[in-house]
Length: 137
Image (cartoon, rainbow, N blue to C red; front, side):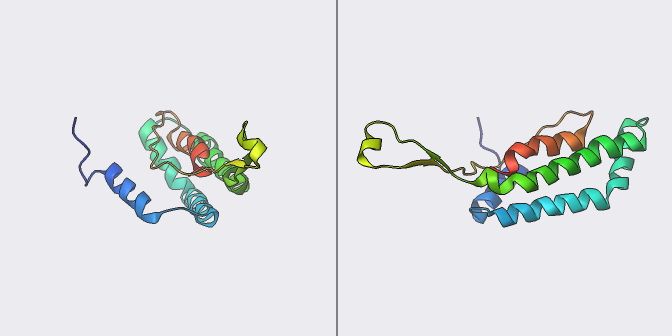
């Protein structure tokens, strides 16, 4: 089995991820804001592209399911992002708890995430599944 070439998209994404380092809440919120801006500004173009693919899906359905649904998910992510990023205190197990130790969970990104979405609602399914990833890394 061969490793991916250094010019593949996944290899470039991994290099960019490693070069960037830890991403702050402010950067993540900025990225969510930019995604929201793209969806709002280009809603009609997105609907036209979806209609070109599906041929018969009404404009209103495209705007309601893919665009408005995605906007709602992104707003939800933005609202809860800081809460999702907070570390959580946990009780220390025996015997460390007796020695005064403290335990907590620090949520950290693990790397690049690829999202494969079904064909029927491509925009909405990408943003809905990205909800689990945006606050965690």
